[in-house]
Length: 156
Image (tube, rainbow, N blue to C red):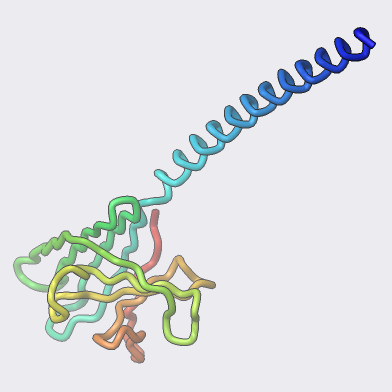
């Protein structure tokens, strides 16, 4: 009887030790996974879109939009081409994201200056199937229907 009892205690202790080792191993694996995801996310948190948008009184607006999803900030640089002298305008601020672009419920809209009055807000968005192309949107957060190019392309 003592042998069975002792065997039972040794078995429970052995299982408990193995359980702790498994838990420690899974914590280490989880920690490594988080580190990998974090490094990967850091690389993917800043997106840079570039393109030439239409301009009423110049040859085009060279536009660079940098979006940092980690800090929810943006930087928008615009150079009015064909103007003398060409001036660069840079705007920085906070951004917010919204789900749904027109008929695409998984599309994304970036609201630049979301913490400002509506007249200072700028809207860009992309379809979920084509995140590499981001469109300058009108005040109603709709893609501008035109033969002119109101799109920027993902560069980084």
